[in-house]
Image 1 (cartoon, rainbow, N blue to C red):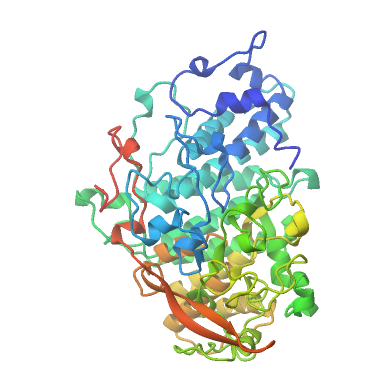
Image 2 (cartoon, rainbow, N blue to C red; image 1 turned 135 degrees about the vertical axis):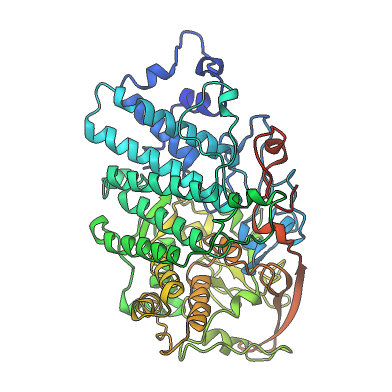
Length: 592
């Protein structure tokens, strides 16, 4: 895939601008060079470069994107996002006050700053969709490409179009459906479609992509869309569509014109949507073996010792490049040290970086159960002197996710010190650093090729469990799905006899732990309509202050890091003010 992503400079520059004008208006020819759209489709090699550009614009990263060509707007303005969206949830707090997540925490999001404060790829998505539409229109013209290749490319274009439309859907609800390339400005002035129409359009692209894509590729081309990737996107789309944010007749806030409510919800609540979501998740699990995708579960590595923590099943699943659990990953960036993308969004400054990281909150750490019995850990409001014991009792995923006091960060920092006066205490507001996504290879100035999973198989066990429980309660199959995830990390099964509501609480907590810091929590909070609950995206976010008593004894005292705000309209993004002023988009409720 690394070779696949090498993009012709001329083609990349040429397609960087999204517009509705004729192609010739964008062409900036170098002396003696004639690059036209017709040239692109004269050979498979040229077409492959164009497909590569499609991925560069259309592949989604769970981290803020700092590629100027991808995030720049038609006016030339671009975003300079710092940190991660996790800092806008109860998972973490940024170690600095300048990251964009702080705008969410203070309720300062407005239509005029949404591009710079989360949706940096808004314009890039439209570029990707335009590229996909052109490929669908012209790939059959390539003279030296066989039918198998042409069919595959169509599937890739359908997947990327569906992926980018889903990314818009989860942020805004209904959007303008663009199913062809536009030639004139007038042609592009289309209104938002209903939420239901948008969901159906995404699902059709997913189904078509499943029919057209291969089950797998040679190792050198990993990162291209597969049948399983399209099934995964369909599952996530249906899960969101079935959730309370969208699956309702009464939106969280009514549109100014009530007739427009179907832009942001179905207009009715239908429990059968959960069955569709469950079936789609099951389809992913059923298709995984053919694609060579499997849950990582080596029994000896379910609860690794601190010295062998990098061998833990859970850590291998998020750290090891091209591991068996990954369905599709963002592989569009070259090797980089801690000072390059995306590592400078993750690597703590006290560990030797220069930009910004995240500290795990006590709100998040409280979600970890005790590994012995699966019961909640007790965190005393006044604190205590047993911090080491409390950490040692937690779910084994804790030590593979969180860089806590006394733990190992990497070979360069074998013992983390976040106690008062410790080497790694500065700006560690939560009392522990986020370790997840920081590969061992970054220690001692090393470089690592970013390959961050967009879809891993573990998610779909939890998608299935959530959906089938909402449809008919905690069936044996729902229990089995969650327990499969827990078993591979040394956790006991869920207790039998849970009610539907009790099971909902447990499966949501399981998502919080298993999918932590993978850009799920922000969207789960909103689709579940729980952002306004205390300590989620509103109210007190807590950390712990740690004092060293002896070489092996530490006192913890909970405290409030920040009191956050959440305005109800923030359940959906506002459309960018410049886009609304063009006259064809109806703004989301509360942002008018």
